[in-house]
View 1 (tube, rainbow, N blue to C red):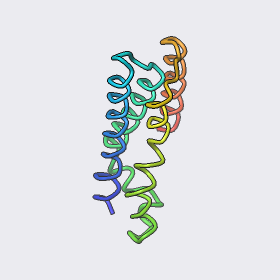
View 2 (cartoon, rainbow, N blue to C red; view 1 turned 45 degrees about the vertical axis):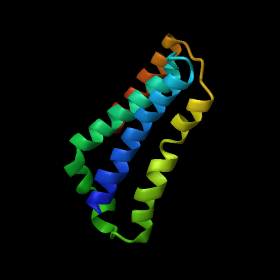
View 3 (cartoon, rainbow, N blue to C red; view 1 turned 180 degrees about the horizontal axis):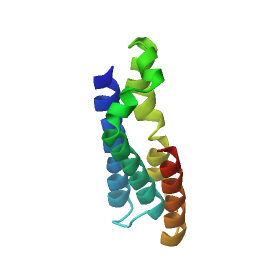
View 4 (cartoon, rainbow, N blue to C red; view 1 turned 90 degrees about the horizontal axis):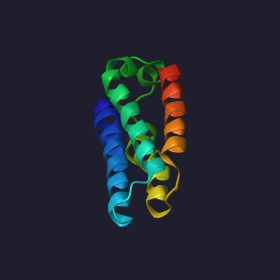
Length: 118
């Protein structure tokens, strides 16, 4: 359960966000889509927090109680990598055209939410 959730699922999510950001950069004449960049950065920082707090996550009640059955394995292998990176995949083909200041303000808002969650 730990291998599927922590190693495969979360690592793929992290790599997918960074890969989509790079693909957008190369696809759109080496210009930075600040909305996509800050979105990928916020996901990256969230996942860094996850890996730093991994043992705390493994001690959470839903991980302790739930068994490693089909539902949790399917969720880790399919749902998390595909759905949690959906907005970054969308932004590759449809750039946000947000200014640096607008995207930065949204990024700070997401970091405040992540801080409150932690």
